[in-house]
Image 1 (tube, rainbow, N blue to C red):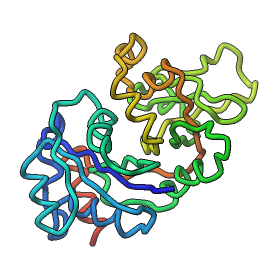
Image 2: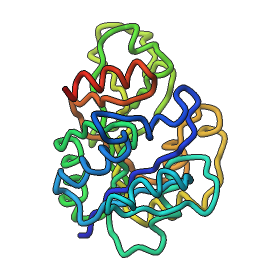
Image 3: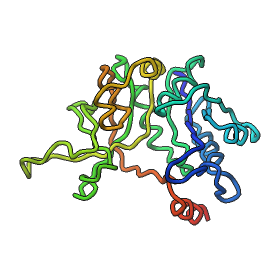
Image 4: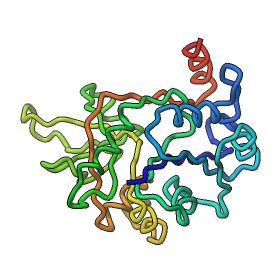
Amino acid sequence: MKVIAVIPARYASTRFPAKLMQDLGGKTVILRTYEAAIETHLFDDVFLVTDSDLIYTEIVSHGGKAILSVKEHESGSDRIAEAVAKLDVDIVVNVQGDEPFIDKEPLEKVIEAFKYDTENKVDLASLMREITNEVDIRNPNNVKVVVDQNNFALYFSRSVIPYPREKNVGVRYFQHIGIYAFRKQALLDFYSLPMKSLEASEKLEQLRYLEFGKRIKMIETTHVGIGIDTIEDLEKARLLLK
């Protein structure tokens, strides 16, 4: 089973333009992320895929492997699918470009979901963590997921799911953590399928997989990513690096 990591990287960012090219302890954010992915020793290869000549050059000039996107894309899955279409690979892991402090354990867990999937029932694997704070549960920026008895995703939403009409019935609430591993074919199928109403409404690309019958295995974790979305996040990252 050949497993690769792909880091989708856009130069533009609404909240923090050019964040991936910011200095973080003498290296750019994106170079630190790329090197951290390699240092996990989980992958047969690591690629960056980008729409930016600047980011492409940053990785290649430091001996890394990068792919320039041919098209504009609506989602990270689309960008990755274009990049891996001609690669000889079985499993593709999406590593977020703005998370340079990569935690090896959650990546290992999503890869293991495929190693033990002897009946090929898993199309994608992703992570979820339990949340108990009412504010976190109601926050639409925290995507929630509900699963079946085998921890396959039933639905993702920015709304509170399940709705707590009855209290004290043992319901647990899970936040989706956006680390994915895909079978290559699931990615290619996604790339060729149209966006439907659920995905368009919630602005959640994982709903396209569910709408077209793909099975997403959810794995519980306590992992909380350290992403860089604002200048304040960058300053915190610099302090953490020190």
